[in-house]
Length: 406
Image (cartoon, rainbow, N blue to C red; front, side, top):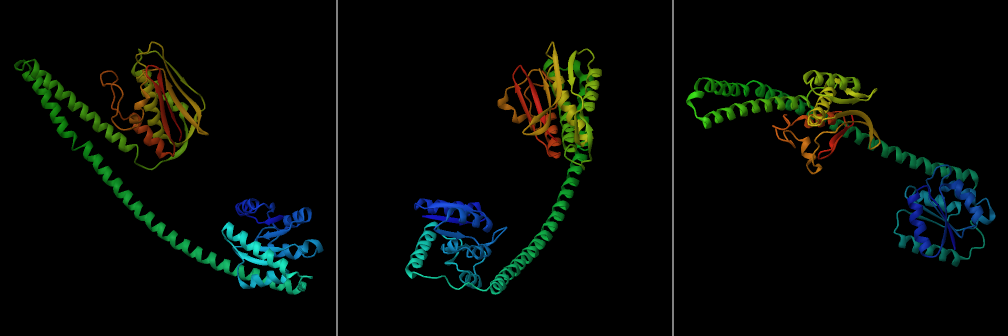
C-alpha cells in the first residue's frame, strides 16, 4: 500500500512517514498541492493524506484539481489539518469529495487507527459513483467564505497579539527607565566612593608615611636593628597601600563613562606605547614587532589603556631574556578578527591562568616583577565593554600570548 503525504511542514511529514512505514506502507511526500498533483499522477497512491493550509496550492484547491482526473479522483482523500478545523471547513471538504476531515495533532497510533477505520468504511460502502461535484461557482463561493473566515480570525489573533506586545513593550520601556535610573545612581555612588578613596583614605596614608619617615630620620640611631626594620616595613606597606588605591581608581575608571566609538589605529597606539617604554628603559634591547594596518572600532582612550597594559606586561616579563621579543599582530579567533600580544618571557603555569583576570592576582613576586596586579583585570573589563573576549595562553619559561576581540 502506498500513501501520499502532502504537507508544508517537514516535521509533520516525517512523523507521518515513520508511522506508516512502521506499519509496512510505502510513503511518498509533497510540500504543497501543486507538487501533490505531480506526485499523485506519477505514483498513483492508494491514499492521500493532505494538510489544508499550504503555499502555492492549498489542500482544498488540490482536492478540486485532483477530482478533475478520473483515476486520481477515485483515490481516498483525507484532510489532516490544525488550522481549518471548523464545521464549515468539514462541509466544504465533504462537498469536494474528501473521505474525511481529521484534526491535528493526533498521536501516531490514533492517526493510524482512524485512517484504517475510514478506509474500511470506504470499502464497506462499495460506492459505485462519487457524489455529484459542486458547481464551480458554488465551490468557489464556499471556498472563499472559508478562507475569509479564517483570515478574519487570524487578523483578530494578530491584533490581540499586537496589543499584548505593545503592553509588554510599554512595560519593558518602564523597566528600562527604572534600571537606567538605578544604574545612574550606582554610578554616582561609585564616583563618590572613588572620591573618598582618592582623598579621604589618602590622608591617613600620607600621615603614616610622613611620621614613619620622621621617625627614621630623627630616631633611627636610638632604635636597634629590629626597630628600624619595623619602620621600614611600615613605610613599604603604606606605599603599597597607596599603589593599591591608585589601582582601584584606575580599575573603576575602566568601567565608567560613555564609550565614544571610532576607528582606532591599534598599530599606531602600540608604536606609541613602545616608544614610551624605550625612553623609560633605554638600556634594554627588545625586538618589538608591531604589524601594520591593525584597526578596530572602539573607544580610543580605553583601547590605548588596554594596549599599554598588554604591551607593558610583555615588555616587563621579558626583562630576564637576553634576546627579548614582543609581538603585536592580527589573528582570527572563533571566526572573528582578533589581535594578539605575544612575548618570549618568563611565562607561567596555565593551571592558574583564570586568576590573572581578577584584581591583585599575581603569578610572580613583587621583588621579581614589580606591579600592582590589575593590568589584565583592566584589559578584560575594557574588552568586555566593547563586546569582545580575551584569553591568555602561556607556558612556564616559554612566554605568553594574550588574544582579544573588540
